[in-house]
Length: 345
Ligand code: SF4
View 1 (tube, rainbow, N blue to C red):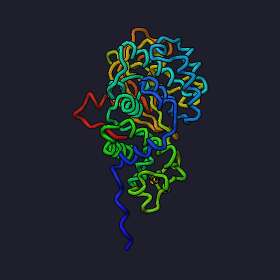
View 2: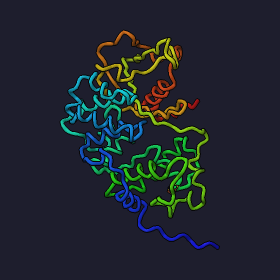
View 3: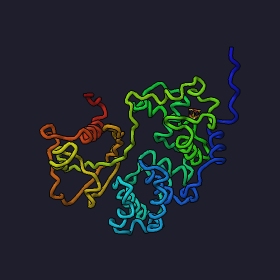
View 4: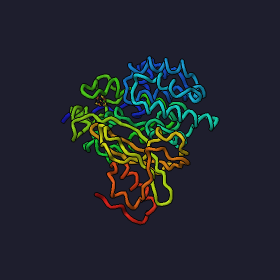
């Protein structure tokens, strides 16, 4: 019988943080404790590699060195500084959130309050609140899911929302209670530099001794994916604007490359004058490789732009309505009818 593996020295979190402090890359956003600068880096790093982000990050912050400077800038200047990074709604949301922070007169330190800002999802709120304010929230992105699915030899499909939730709970249970920011950065660093998708460098890994995938030499079998594609996380917001029994929608133009002619809930980018209210909830939707997390918020407007239209909610089945809009409306409906289970389709 093989000898048992030696007991790992220190907790998962402590070994990870010790390793991180010894080997971490010197990146510009790691030289600051300014929440604004950390937040900008986290938004830029969504869907963009570290090496590509660095020059944009430095240029953006030389133009908008403070949250006040970003809030006060003309939008065209902000978009110009973002030009080349893509996903421009990230820049618009960043500026809109900066304007809200200026109104608040302080940067929200609390996870929940920061999560309320435009363009901020669970991952971003956890990353910024833990790194800048030591809040105990595990930040879970694709890299972290890969590390944890291997370390625990998770047999479930990573594209399944229940499995991702399970791994998020695991991340939260492993979080260092006093050093959540270092823990989160260390997990991201491990996923980005050691526990690589195709070629995990287990000999360099600080948590190798109790990694279940490595112990059974099955590292490349995890994460389990039924769909053989890498999922890209996209965070988006839509607005539910109601007037009595009516709801406001806009229609995708006929020349749209996707879902032409379908009706959608408004995106806040296109309703700059809307008064945005509380979060109703979050729905998820997958399109090709995109795992879209949609935050649904209540909103009000006083004037309706010409390409928007009111619809009777009771008549929505008469129009082509996007799946995202349907899911968001079901969410609202299920909140109103808490005693009734929504029908599955
Ligand atoms: S031991 Fe290997 S597979 Fe396990 S977490 Fe470390 S790098 Fe990833």
